[in-house]
Length: 261
Image 1: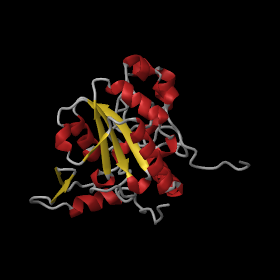
Image 2 (image 1 turned 180 degrees about the horizontal axis):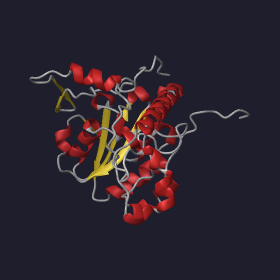
Image 3 (image 1 turned 90 degrees about the vertical axis):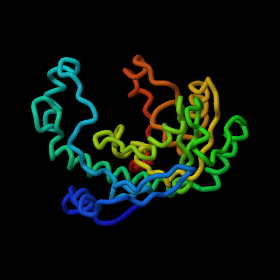
Image 4 (image 1 turned 60 degrees about the horizontal axis):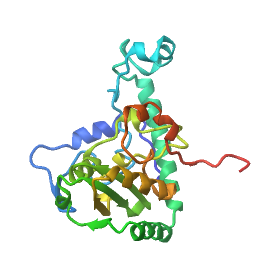
């Protein structure tokens, strides 16, 4: 479990990050054949750079769509009437909850046996011969299919699909999960997002070129033990209809054992 004192001021990491940024060219590393510049969040996931507050919401839902009662109930989380700027109270609560969830996920990862994870991965590869190990992402440039990212340090995998798998995997590495979406569900159950991890956390990649990537992704996610998987929802493309009911298929983890169990 990750431990350590939380900053007295929750904005401190952001201030420190800005102070340490320097002008001029940033150092470059090579990973899976890709040249990656040093980002402000680094190339590996760390607690210090996790859950940095951002007051811009990831989405603004129309007031008439959610209804007046729900709109009013969420007013505390915003600074303005239009719900376009997150409040300090929300950011403080979100950061506290996200860091608690981070620690719980790290403690959960520590309970997973590397040999059990490796056996699970080997079984998946044996049953899906079309999945081949990738050492250079450029071989996936504008290639449609499914992919499996392996994060050995955490005994975790992520399964996805894309028309351009090279670009999609790079986005996983360089994107940063929106601050208000770090948690999906309760802080004691939320799965850590794959987009919170960084490039060097991915230690192996497997990929299958296919025009039936949707079907393959769905099958792989369904058959891979959830304890070893970072996917937050079932596999398959997200249609408008499915998106409306997506909350019903969110994957959760029991990160805290309730008394009496």
